[in-house]
Amino acid sequence: MITAYEFINNKRRGLEHTAADIEWFVKEYVNGAIPDYQAAAWLMAVCFNGMTDCETCTLTMAMARSGDMFNPSLGKFCVDKHSTGGVGDKVTLFAAPVCASCGVYVPKMSGRGLGHTGGTIDKLESIPGFKTALDYDKFISVIKEAGFAVAGQTGTLVPADKKLYALRDATATVESIPLICSSIMSKKLATGADGIVLDVKVGSGAFMKNEESAEELARAMLRVAELAGKKCTAVLTDMDKPLGRTVGNSIEVVEAIEALKGNSPEDFRDIAYRISAELLGLAGYGTPEKCFEAVEEAVTSGRALDAFRKMIELQGGDPRVCDDYSLMGKAKYSMEIFAEKDGYINGIACEETGVCALLLGAGRRTKEDSIDMTAGIKLDVTVGDKVNKGDRIAVLYTSGNSDMQEIADRFSKAFSYCDNSVIKRKNVIKILRNS
Figure 1 (cartoon, rainbow, N blue to C red):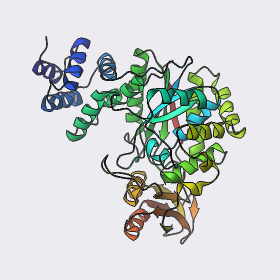
Figure 2: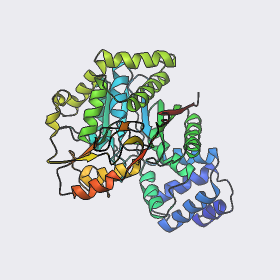
Figure 3: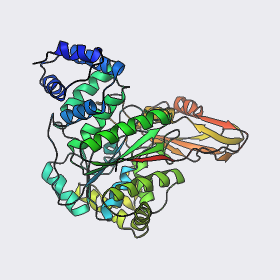
Figure 4: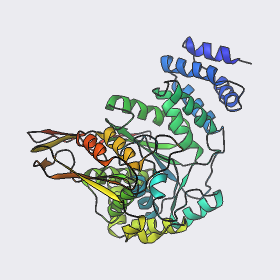
C-alpha cells in the first residue's frame, strides 16, 4: 500500500502514477485521511511536472465517482454543455431550449457565478418563483415534459472537486491543464450526459487568455471524454469582449429570450447557434449544415421559446416573463455612459466589465454574498462600432447602495478608441471533435 509521502514524492520526481494509486489518493483525501498540506504538496508537484492523458483520465473518473453518479435513464441520447466561464455568457439559456424543441434531452446541472463571471443558476433565479433546487424525481419529470431542466449541483456531486478546487484556489495551483480538465470533466461525467459540448472561452475575460492555452485545455478534455467513452466537441469562442449586449442576471435572461424570438446581436447569434448545432450533431441530428438549419427553424417556429416557457412553469417560475419583462423587476437607479471621443471602439475590457457589474451588485465576491438581480450593464456598442463623442455607449443599473459615479468613472476606462476601422476577432475561433 502506497503512503501519501510516496505518492507526493513520485510526482515530484516526475513519475507516472498508477491508476490504483490515484484512486486511493482521491478516496483517502475525500475521507479526510490525507490532510490538506499533503494534498497541496501533490497539487504543486502536478503543476510543475504535469500528468499523462491516462493519469488525467483516471483522476477525472475517480473524482466523478467520489460522490453520487447521476444517471438520468431517460431512454434517449442526452447532451450537456459546459462553458469555461465568461462575461455576459447566457448561451445555455438559448441552447438548452433549442435542443429540447428538436427532441434532444438536456439534463443540465449548472453553477453559480463567482468573481467577474456569471452563473446560469443566478440568472434563472431572477425569474419570479423559479426553483433551481430540484430533487431527482422532479428533475427527471421536468426533462420529460419540457425536454430540458436546469438545476443547481447537489452537495453530493463530485465532493473531491469541491475540496480540491478550494485547495487549489488557496495554494496558487489553479493554472494546471490536467487539474482544470479533471475539475470540469469530473462534473460532466458525473451528471451522466452521453454527449458533451465544451464552450472554451478565449480572451481577456476568460480563464484562458490566448488561443494556444485554450486549445491545449480543449484537447485535454476531449481526450478524457474519449477515454471515458463520451462523444465530445470543443468550441473555442471569443471572450475578449462581453458576449452580447448585457451583463447581469435579469437583463441577460431578457437578452436570451429575445434571442429565442430571433433577435440577437451578431456575436451572441454566431456562438449560441453554433453551440446548439454542435449539441444536435452529437445527438445524431445530421450534418453540421442540417443541424444549423434545425436551430434556425426551432427559433423561427417559436418552438424553442415554447420549450423555455414550459421549463420555467415546471420549475415554479412565472412563464409570463417571456412576454412581460417587467415581472423580473426594474433597477432603482441607472446611469448612462457616454463616448469620450470620436472614433471606433477598439476594445471593451472584458474582465473589467465583469468586475464593474459585480460592483453594481450583479455578482458575488464570496459564495455567501447575495445578488441584486436587477443590477448589470447594457451595452449600446460593441468592438468595431463607430461613435461620436457624447454618444451613449452603455447604461449601468443597480438597486443597491453602490457608488454609481465611481463605478461609471471606472467603467468608462474599459473602452478604448482608435481612428481607423477595426478588424473584428472571429466569434467562433475553432471547433475540435473527438469523433
